[in-house]
Length: 217
Image 1 (cartoon, one colour):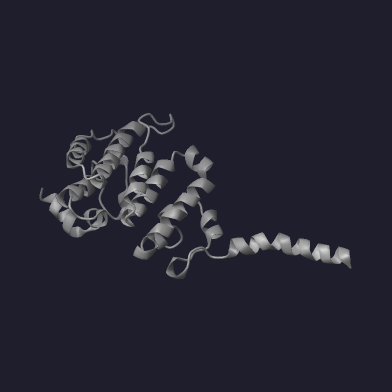
Image 2: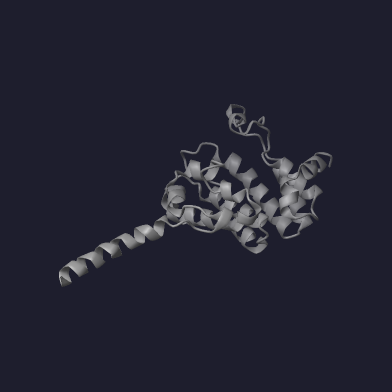
């Protein structure tokens, strides 16, 4: 009998972690299946509005939960993301989600981590031509969050002066976004940050009013 009890206890102990992992994280509208999220491939997790973190990030009350989820995913897939040079992009999405949630200090720290090295891997032809404007966009956003109008204006000047990469005409992003490709990327976002410098980041970044005001600058 003693052995039967021990075996039964062992079975229960073995099952307990699995049951715990199946429990949803968060609560209410912010609840999600942690293990299912971490099993997603990187594109589904990062880009799919229904499967990945964006389903939470699109809810104002769930943005901190979404940012924490992105951080979990980065740690769970760090080797893979590093291998394809995607950690800066994932850090950026965590950073902006925290900024939208009002956590400016953590957002700024993460944005610094999302800067890309100027010299990329050999197999990524033309890396530098795209990395430099990306970094200027990141620096412009950091300047906005740090309330440094001068640094924001300088980053905007560098971004606007970015030379068009040789292969840009071959780059088709319109199929994914529905928006015609333009160069330099994110210049309209930065102009919106400048036009609405005194607004919260969420408004300056995303409102049509700020984007239109940026166009008129």
